[in-house]
Image (cartoon, rainbow, N blue to C red):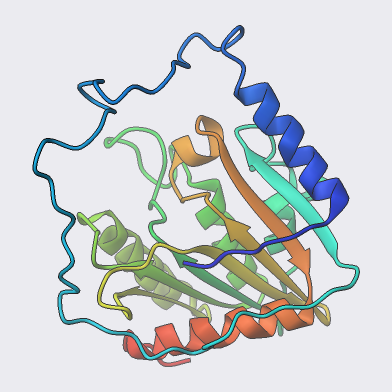
Length: 249
């Protein structure tokens, strides 16, 4: 996974106000105080010992140190369910991806990205995943698109998405590739989209997965920034994970 920490006053103030509105038992009946005795959410059973076994896996670090800097950045807070699917002319993820055209690139690394939304009987035509459609549209405009999805936790849905994208790219002659990967040995839990467009580099980073609920029902957050430094830092990690998953650019 990846994280972006900021002390930007406007961002911090917005998120504090959002938290205060959510953490309001008077208006949200599903909030309740935690107790150790709660049968579902309480403490661990008597005698519980955390598993300290690493499983024998390891990961060759791309960046041993975090990227740290100060200065002004163009940033946008994205929150589900309110603004994660804004129309392209209003910003958000779809607006960021819509910037990409011929000669540009879109890099996607996700825990999962569904082939379609709706029910299991739906299709990409009857209930499209608007996020996935945005990546495909970028490829149709001439952008290079690379999508890396988790293989470790996947129950088959990511494999369906990869097969769908691969067939579509072949049928239409698009510079678009999708892979299943497990570069760390413990799965991909990232929710990251990187866009290089028109000489600018953009990063979308947060908690939003590629399901319909993540965009339309859950409380999820992401932040988008325009920054060459942040983009380059995260793109290097993506490239390493892509290569370790058998990908060829």
